[in-house]
Amino acid sequence: MNGPSPADSALVQAVLPLAGGDTDLRIGVLASGRGSNLRVLLDRCADGSLPARVVAVACNHSDAPALAIAAEYGIPYRAVPRAGHPTRLDQQHTLADFLDGADAQLIVCAGFDRVLEPPICDRWSGRLINLHPSLLPAFAGGLHAIADALAYGVRVTGVTVHFVTPAVDAGPIILQEAVPVAPDDTLDSLRARIQAVEHRLLTEAVALYAANRLLIEGARVIIQP
Ligand code: GRF
Image (cartoon, rainbow, N blue to C red; front, top):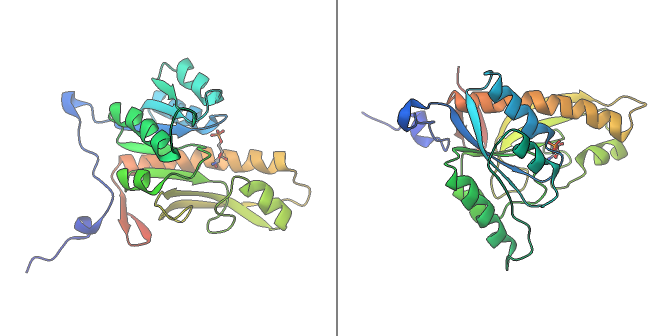
């Protein structure tokens, strides 16, 4: 009897070879700020350690330094500020249209500072990932997870890379890593250690996705050997 295979129930889409023999994963990036994670992705693509290519960068702020990084690397980019759009959803569809127009397969939120509206999450279901500077579900839902962890007095915080669903910061977790909080940590010192972990974990998660090794089963992500 033929039952459904695990792959049938997976939300993750296979990375299909592209026309012209181009098998690199095409990444679209949503960013809002400094863009250090964007730069790491660009560098890992350029040095060949990621079989991927950043094909477009979209920002929701016109002055985001991430835009200058995209320009520096010659990547198509676009700023889509909230002004001029009747609703936040309209703005986000414009951002999404730009990335889809570049045929992005995987969308990476690399420091995107707004909650994505449910229709946007659904539009990219199973191919939209985010990184969050805490061990989710701790310190979910805010923009200040590092400061919040410090203020709470936790001994351990960390980094999470997860698929994005309409449930804010609650999508299936791909990778997590703990970062101990030192007694004399400041916001800057803790942020520096967390960002170093982010840069490595995001690269690892994208590599797993590019290798088609991620399956979403219910709330969990199975990493296939
Ligand atoms: C990261 O700490 C990320 O976890 C959070 O925003 C920050 C973005 O950093 N969502 P950068 O712009 O990539 O340097």
